[in-house]
Picture 1 (tube, chains in turn blue, yellow):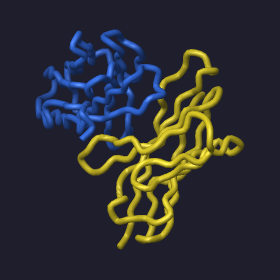
Picture 2: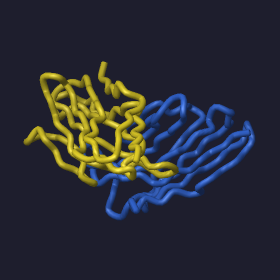
Picture 3: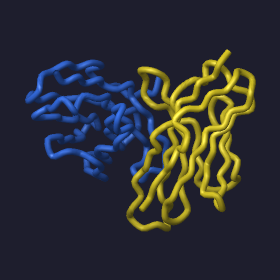
Length: 114
Length: 117
């Protein structure tokens, strides 16, 4: 068990809708990362937060947004959903924010857009 | 441009035989290198990392990796494969502290390892 909790495990929704994915990092970890994993594009880094502040941005679409709250949990908001957004979304956490400490991944949220 | 390559989409090996999963990279400065494993329907799990020091790094589940600076490689190895090692393996690299501000973690596309009984 990585100590990272993601909810929900599965999400099925229709195109055009908006969903929120939630992540609770491992105890003591200040950094949270969001990743998207799909068969055709592999593992894509979306965004990183460190202690409540945005630290790095990857291939995150403008329709997507995230935040990290004072209690360090994080939410990823996906809006105007398209079929191509169907994927596995992972949250990971680490102690530091510089990318030199190992990432601890949750088991993901599988999003299906119909 | 910084990049990571895992040249083999799939590796097949018989149980008990040694296994190698290849990774090559291109980053500025001295790299930070990582291996992760992903079992079906699970998140990635950290296996090992190289930042500095001995070129041979030992990690979880009997895995090890060798950093080769001249060949810019960081291949994952295990002396004797188990059926339970069958999974998806990811190599990741981050540019070192002497590379300026571009220190995002860059991921390979993954290599599927199948260990046959």
